[in-house]
Image (cartoon, rainbow, N blue to C red):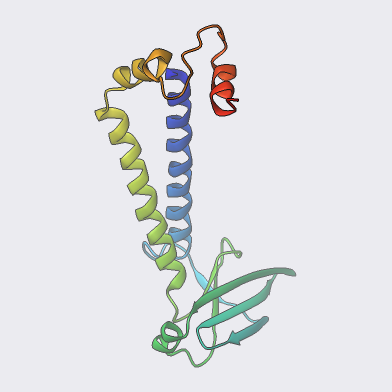
Length: 172
């Protein structure tokens, strides 16, 4: 039981740490943390704007060094109108050309900042639960089969706990 709990803890910490690193690196590549990278304006751009009563979907593709990159935005109409974008200008990172954004719409930076906050929250939650919980007490509680009479029958002739559980579920 201790090994299973530790595996889930390590997997959880690894997952949320990778999510945190990806969000921070993408935010840095979008120059959300400072002007680290040169952002250039894409020249060969094909945009498609689909607007309905609630949403605005902007899909665009651009070519850099004979390689085509695609991206899209999905936002509410009110946010799109609040940004007041007349012409769509695509800016891309000169070092990482697959990282791009629409000039005047800070939706991608906001998405990465939200990812950082969510990742930090779950990392902090996992670490605090791991450090502050009484794991030995809970492991001992759940390892004792006799403390869970609602799960297993009183029939002690079945020694396999899984078969006892199935016997309890499908009792005739």
